[in-house]
Image 1 (cartoon, one colour):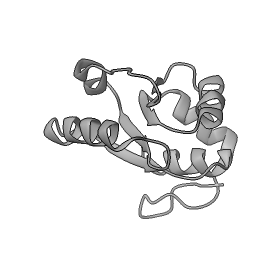
Image 2 (cartoon, helix red, strand yellow):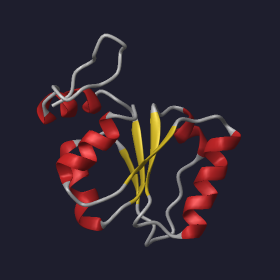
Image 3 (tube, one colour):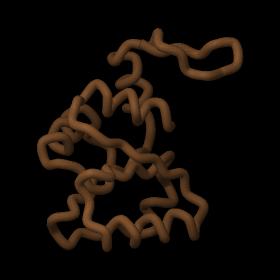
Image 4 (cartoon, helix red, strand yellow):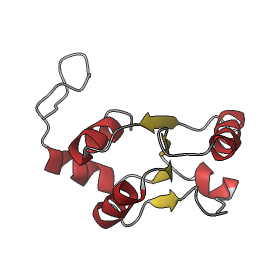
Length: 115
């Protein structure tokens, strides 16, 4: 659980359900990720944008510009894809974040801590 402390930092009192509710209202792009994790996130957050790196998919810059954050799944992304979107994000001063692991609650907590 997380909540904001006196300094505005997230502490550990917000429930996973509260995190999901806040995250559902955000515009997020997930780049990469293990297929099982991506499938779960698609069920929880169907309005987010997902790009699988196993296929030759592409997200136009215009789509990334309208996002609150672009999240890289560092453990399941090919180097070419990572560097392509990282360069695009940095060049356009986009907010980026990273997630790792396979525990869904930890992934949601990681994303929540970065938005």
